[in-house]
Image 1: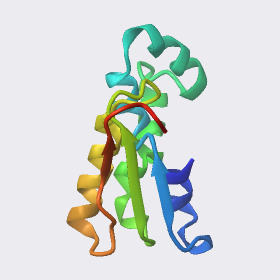
Image 2 (image 1 turned 180 degrees about the vertical axis):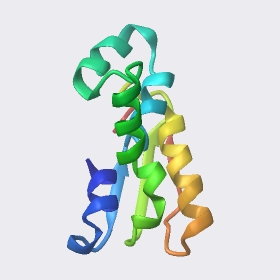
Image 3 (image 1 turned 60 degrees about the vertical axis):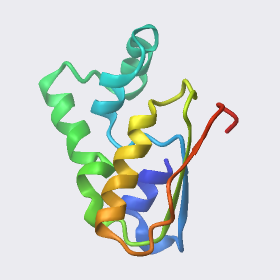
Image 4 (image 1 turned 120 degrees about the vertical axis):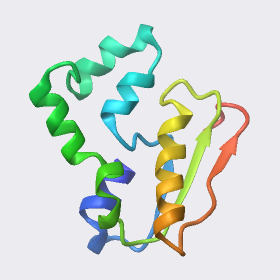
Length: 113
């Protein structure tokens, strides 16, 4: 939710703290453990359906990085089962390349978030 608000409602916030955020629901589903994937598809949309996949790519914060206008701090637990660490890493890397006011990406060793 933090990434969606930061991307599409940046004018309403001063900054954001992304904790275990999904920067792209397609890559999230691709990297989620198999035992959780079908449950997440019911919740977020089935990435195997071409129309749904196109929609998920369209709304992905990762694919709208230029719309993120406010400072962001990204935190992720390396062993957190809620979202693959790659989701936080890819948004952090993209923000580092684009923004000077991006705060460093923090990986917490345990899933303590």
